[in-house]
Length: 197
Image (cartoon, rainbow, N blue to C red; front, top):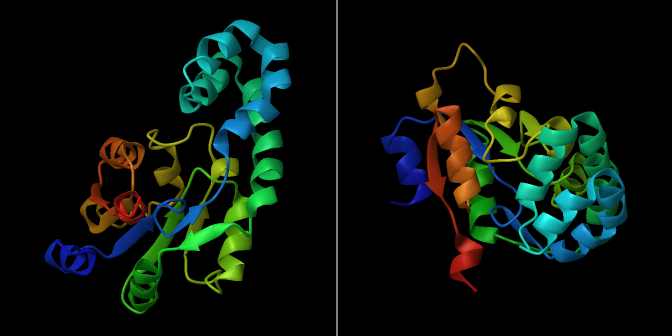
């Protein structure tokens, strides 16, 4: 079912969008991010780095870094993420069809962004796209301890007076889907960029 039809059929009024690989596709070499923070992670916990770096999957590394080391682990992530991402702030492909839909949604619905990207990157790219005032709230890496699929970001968006069934998370990944499930809200898969690869 098309997104607009899904929203109407399911009576959604509060739409939460993932950012990277949903609204735009950021061309960021993520393996380089892990290498950039390598020394700081090793200094804090060499065993953790060794265990996760061989897998090539760095979301579990980031999660365990915070779970195991608290603010010390989080500080490494918050220190490196914006600096790294902002090097690539001009390198993205727009999802033009979805962006046009989102512009029409502004008149009817409350709009939000819940992303794993840094607030610095989100705000810069949204300004470039002249979309910086489209959203009621933006939740990024800087605002949470844990990334999706943790539901933590939803707490920063949710209006307690609005029933959960009115919210819809639109994203491209199983992490987005897991976050929606953990938050108790519906999910719509919009994997435009994955389909185009």
